[in-house]
Length: 79
Image (cartoon, rainbow, N blue to C red):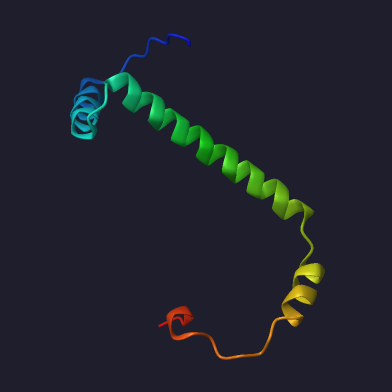
């Protein structure tokens, strides 16, 4: 495990302290989780960009042509 010293504005530090307390975790745990979520989000965006670059609209349309032509379930309709 690594140690990282970070300078935070007082207002952010107060918010983090309060939110960590509400979550029942330490400030370190709260910040670690927040960073993990951000890293995951950025990695996911990059993954999706790479997948989209490999995609083919022609192939997608051929797949959609095989879908049955039926009425959508009531819960699936856009209102």
